[in-house]
Image (cartoon, rainbow, N blue to C red; front, side):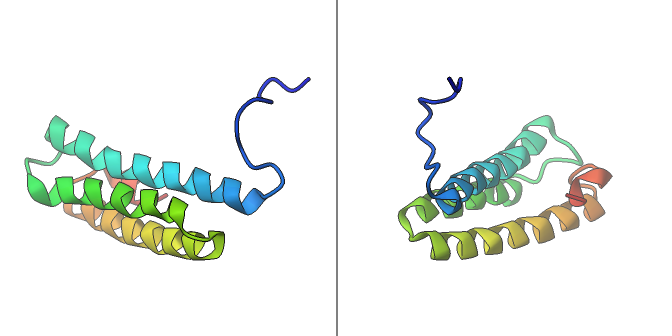
Length: 102
């Protein structure tokens, strides 16, 4: 018996499971910017840094309503935007130097 048998992941459709996983990761990556602002890492930037934390989940959650193909494409674009934003934040000192290397 599998211990996680009652978790409602679509085992017959791995693309849908990937869509759900990526949505959660995008939301988490956005939340990191809130934590950096609350901690005052690199100074206080206010709404600019909070906006980076809000955009990620605001894009990620609606992708669950899209067909899998469109959702994965839009999530890829969101990951690309976040990587660019995080690399710039690390280069400017708004995030740790290692943070722009995921």
